[in-house]
Image (cartoon, rainbow, N blue to C red; front, side, top):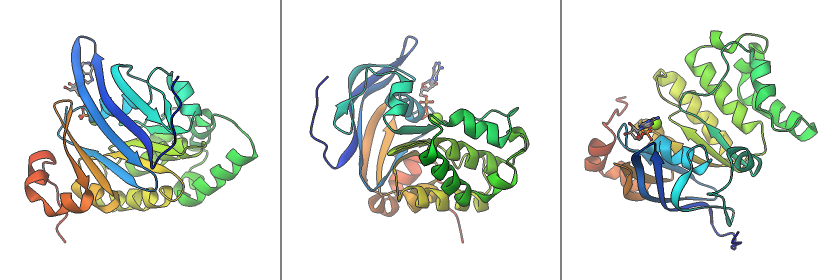
Length: 245
Ligand SMILES: Nc1ncnc2c1ncn2[C@@H]1O[C@H](COP(=O)(O)OP(=O)(O)O)[C@@H](O)[C@H]1O
Ligand SMILES: [Mg+2]
């Protein structure tokens, strides 16, 4: 394995190709995530956003290209190895267990149960007070917003330096989207965040840099400021849902 100097990019995805069965889904995707920033991947349904995140964490092995995390190539590593290296993942379907309690969901998620993790759990429950309130309740009985909070909590309770979150605003009421935005703004204090989002309000509220995926390729990238100015990009790739207020 090639060892490289750590630069400002904690994650570099270089020319990654990923197949699902016979289907050539990612066709040479490149993007990076800068330290101390939130990077947003946007693009229409079916563009390959979820596939890109799953490729990074090794759930969908890539057939070509390199994925470099903290200077190390990880494209051949297993998901559990990648998780232990400090990459957290919140999947689109949230990945929580409806039949388990909030507490059990948290315990299942913890890679190690030590004092440091206990302190992180405490910090996480301070951020998401409802999770403490419903600690003994079945996760299946939580509201949509609370489930998303639990899904995020399960990732950040571990020692993550990079957190990948797939469409956290999906199906949530605007007021709950605001709560998720607030949570991400807190999380970015101690973790680099890569966010998949279709919601322009969410993307522009938390994002610093953006990459647009279309048909398995990156077709545009830049500062989120540029995306905010460029209404043509927004309407072409985001099916814009701007909040009018
Ligand atoms: N399990 C699967 N089997 C076959 N095709 C899939 C599967 N999952 C995703 N795809 C296809 O891969 C493409 C990219 O999907 P995905 O990464 O989920 O897109 P996005 O997250 O941008 O909506 C789509 O065309 C989708 O139909
Ligand atoms: Mg998706």
